[in-house]
Length: 76
Image (cartoon, rainbow, N blue to C red):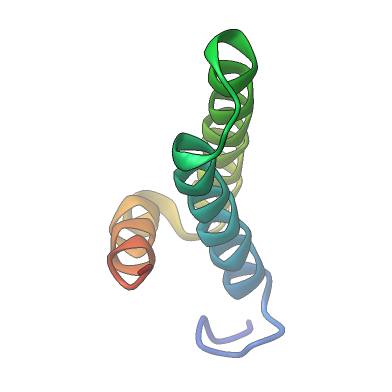
């Protein structure tokens, strides 16, 4: 079993993807897109984060949400 902290681990990759989606959604809130386009962009990012959460949860169990919260708390 791989350790969670290994950079190449599946868990680390999923957490990195979640972080990237979160940052993209944040940027989307401030970009020049308006109305439905902006909403669709942000909704797509959040939906993908949800799918990644389910994937992570299948690997690590209920601790997935705590891992995500910890990861996102480090996003600037």
